Length: 78
Image (cartoon, rainbow, N blue to C red; front, side, top):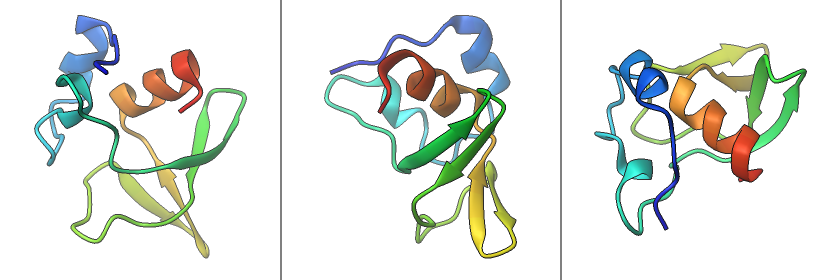
């Protein structure tokens, strides 16, 4: 399944180390979001082993700041 993300959002996500895999047919986001607070802060269930420039430590938790990943979570609850 290809997730529909706006072009504007994709431009903001230009540092994606996974080359936009979530935008390809059959691609899916690498990181799983566990919860969102007011569609502003997105917490991850775990860290990606390769690392990501959009992944940030927050105490013992990790947050996602990837605009494309956030839009996918908000639209599809994935």
